[in-house]
Length: 120
Image (cartoon, rainbow, N blue to C red):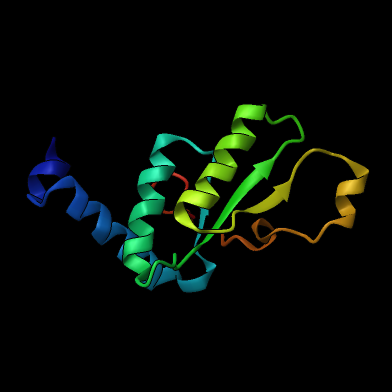
């Protein structure tokens, strides 16, 4: 496990370092693509620490397929309440009425993708 032996820092320290580097490198163009899994909870919690003052330095986006389970919508709202963030939506439902909504930020995601789950 070459990667682990090169950096003896604790996993949480490596996560913090990676997120800080991503924010420094990509600034406001960084996006956390969220599917409301445990991993995103960890990433979002740490991003709030990196951002300071309880704010995340990146946009948080989810893709709405138009067929989300009620449990997913409940988890989505729980994320927003728990972390005091607004999760932006990119519509992928194919619903013609969706075009009347304001376009989401995924339209402007940079081409580079970092090696962190969901962080582009």
